[in-house]
Length: 174
Image (tube, rainbow, N blue to C red; front, side, top):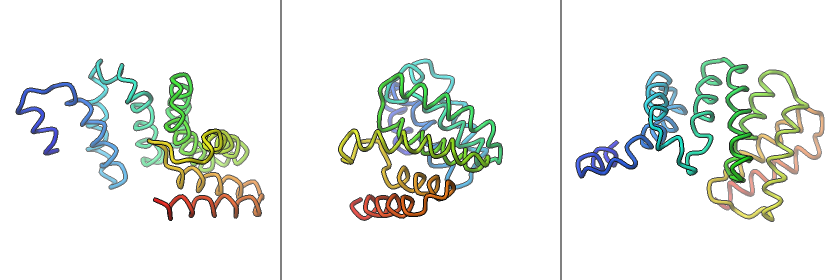
């Protein structure tokens, strides 16, 4: 908030709308859903922000997370599917991998273990394509954690354990 205010005082408007979506990513995990909803709506009014490749899929991801936290997994599913498509079309591997993991979480909530596993297989394939290296913007621990959950839901315990170990290793390395 302070950075946004400083940018505003010096007359730099290029990132003002971006702060709305950035703030939403902080408000959502804290459970401040009304504030997050307002931030998402503010960011969505900026044509420049919507065209910025750095924020490709952000609106759909944020709306998906908001819907999921509000208990509306069906709406969340639609938002995540849109985000995955936008990110894949934009060749944003790191963000697509994260979105696929979040999509899998929603599929699991809806009781579709097979769809969850298909999503995490695609997410982990992206990570493997990059030789399991850290990719800027990717959250490997979350991707592999969701893959472990999807494998467990599909009764693939041995594979789930390996995925969980990879998730732990990603967290340990930071």
